[in-house]
Image 1 (cartoon, rainbow, N blue to C red):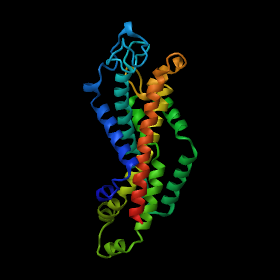
Image 2: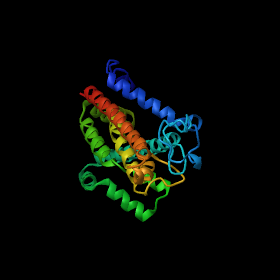
Image 3: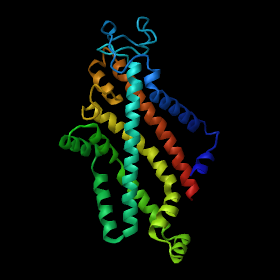
Image 4: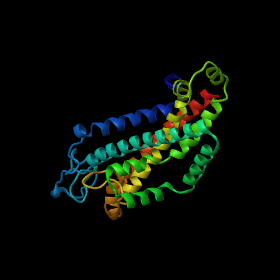
Length: 281
């Protein structure tokens, strides 16, 4: 897997630039406590609704302030930290659940596989936003519940992908040879099959991650996600939408950052997907 990543051509400028920009944004968000010129909820009521790059705002309020005098730039750093963290955890949860279900279906086959495929079809036919809103309305909007629900996003994609890859691998000569030598199912799956498909799982994770970030932002925008005094990019867009005609920077700045994050990760995921697909064939 690592050797496949290293062989990505250095001349691929788009991939390299996307990776560099995403890494820089990740460092900024991780170091928000040290880099941000003001705290996430620090208020300066004398400097309410300052526009970006204003002289009175200075470096502290580089991108202006909101209705409570809080710095947009600082809140974006903290919000990006929250959105990325939820996105990473949610993506990992979805990958683990989906991969486990796919392995389960491929191993047992028969009626078990048919049931799993039916569940996958049902999940694929219903917009996940509706499922998430329904679950949050029933179980409440706690951060733990929110992350678990976010983590179920895209599990069916991983399940279908892993099931297909494992079913194909089970018919290969090396698996037949392992069975003849008496290797158990656990050894075959953990030591041989899983390492051979981990690359496509990682590639799928990078393709799924933008959807998880958008889902978190959308739910927070609707008031069903991160709640004040916390902050996320979607919540910032929600807080600024009422003043979009008079103070557009309140929602445009975090909204553009959401778009940038999703575009960067999608570009990286697309490139990794191509690379692992080529390596597989």
